[in-house]
Length: 150
Image 1: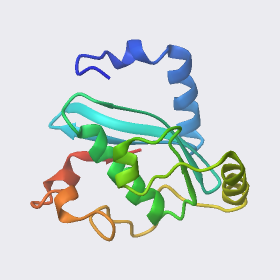
Image 2 (image 1 turned 135 degrees about the vertical axis):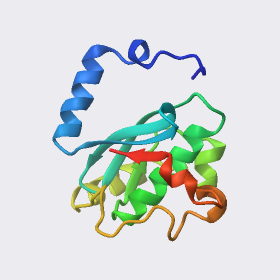
Image 3 (image 1 turned 120 degrees about the vertical axis):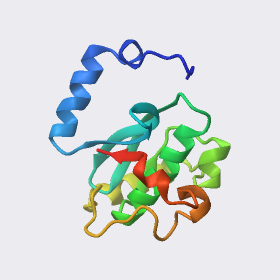
């Protein structure tokens, strides 16, 4: 998306209202990247069981959405998610472990994921441990201060 995008115009009021309702029910989540008080990137989607369906991502600053996506992958793994449906594969998704699968395999993985529970907010979760390296999180650790989840 363009750096000059007006998010309120890009997402219809009906979709906004739906996601607000899904968030209130604990199903919709986002990873947001902030630079001071300015939202510069993010990714959002919906969780069902141990499946997460990525809906969209945006960036107003180069690579801000990629940072949000890396944190999303880390958080989903930490919370026990078994399937992250990204809709299509990009080189960045592939670098994070994404792969294309057959329709049959997708249905199998989805059925399995829907039988399990996962959490977007696992107890003791730390976004700078495990799969996210210092180079992704920022050597100073300040990136976490600029990253918000909901």
